[in-house]
View 1: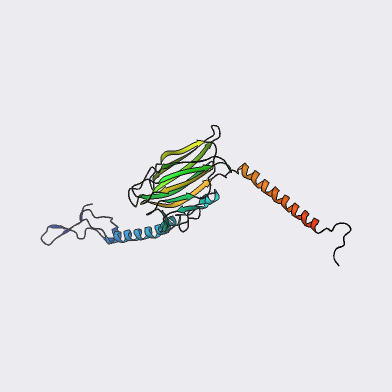
View 2: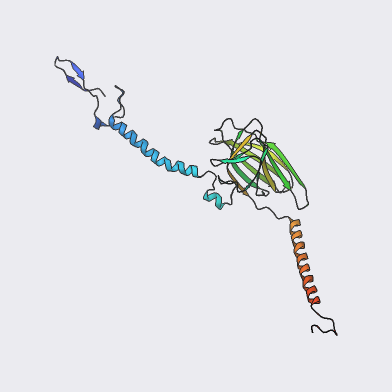
Length: 277
């Protein structure tokens, strides 16, 4: 667009000033590098509206931390930490809760264990951050039967945090193959906000067993946890426990029958005797 010209007193053409009008709604005047007042007001309004609309979304996203979604609750997920209490965790050693984050570790060796027993197949999700030079150790223990075989396997967490902003999302999956009678636990992890997960096998073995998962934190290190969720198939009942329970119930009933019989016998007088005056 060529700027308008006006005739000066000496006959020379001079540019019209200003080279735009407010009602034209020009976004930017490339000739002078100036924003119109109208456009500036529009941009201020757009930014204000965006902030007003995004604020509830940010608050809602923040509210989702350490909480189950309605879909997760309907699917049977268990919340292990609600941001205030480690309701489904067993903690040993140094620990504290800071701004909705469970901090495990300090001057002493510390440990956190998932309280619910995990069935043959499970999925454990959580976000963590680490501080310290040593690896956090993840262990899977099992015990089969009342007096049966027990054992454990352990390995270090593959990824450690680079800085205080480096939160890591990790998913532990437990699987059992009935055809081969093999169980295995693997993990997949990525930085919070990243797209692709990196998968790593952890441990496994023969037989279908219930897993108890725990994390060991060396002295001088810290393990930060949030958004811990667990979904597991039902833990199968141990047949030995069923036999033991039935036996105890049968003994209790037998003891009660004997007690009633002795009391009745004691209250019955022998023949030929007279009770009382």
